Every structure is written in C-alpha cells, then in structure tokens.
Image (cartoon, rainbow, N blue to C red; front, side, top):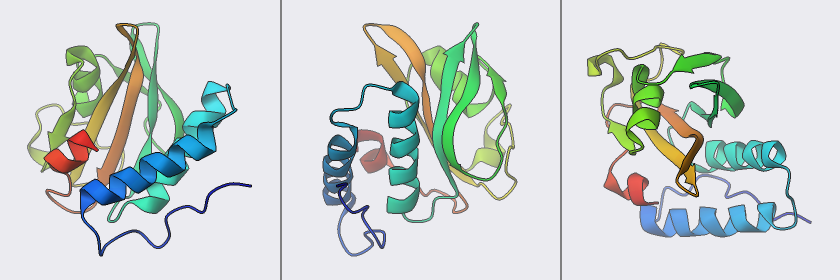
Length: 151
C-alpha cells in the first residue's frame, strides 16, 4: 500500500541520489491525500527514519505571527517560536534556508534538545505566503551542507 521507507538510511550512496529516492517515496505517500497535518506527519516520519544522524525532524507552522509546533519525530520540542528568534524563527523571517554547522554558535539559538549540534531549517512558502518551516536537527556538528539545502 505504501512504499517502503528507505531503511536502513542510505549511507552507501551520495546525498543527491538519497534525496531523489526520498522525494520519490514522499510523492507516493502524499498522492491522494489532501489533509495537511496527515501529510506533514508522514513527511516528518519519512525524513526522520531515512536520514542518517538526525535526532529531530518536523514542522513549525505560522500562526498569529509566530511559529507553532506541527507534526514531528523526535524528542519533545519547543511549542512556540517567535519570528526572528532562533534558527527556525530567523529562517522564517528571512524566508531563506539556514544551514547551521554549530547551533551553539548561532546567536539566539533556542535549545529544545541539548543533544542537537547542527541544524537545517527550510521555509515553506506557497503563493508567496509563508506557511511554516521544516526543521531537521542532528547530534553531529556540520551534519548538513549545500547538498541537504538543495535536496
């Protein structure tokens, strides 16, 4: 019924190939379902279980000029983040993907999980309107790079 989640994580292939396979699996999971929360939940699970060295993957959605926790996989998370605060709030405010090799050096970083050492945050924009952000954390330093940014 559903495509198998890429398991175990693809450590023997390059990131470009890995993201192509993840995108293909994501399209298969989302096809035919219009519920945003269900789709975000499945996307978070797919990313969390498919990517190596990830300890949190999920979404924050824009509500009342701030970000509110949406579907995720990982430890309990911060519920609300103001625009312009932390990596998520900054990426949302700037509408730019942020790759942070060392979150402890990011001014204003919000430490929801002290085990996280690097992070990537991708704004979700539809019809020029900010919907929210995709946030992925790793316990490894410099886990994310330009390949993750374009993946």
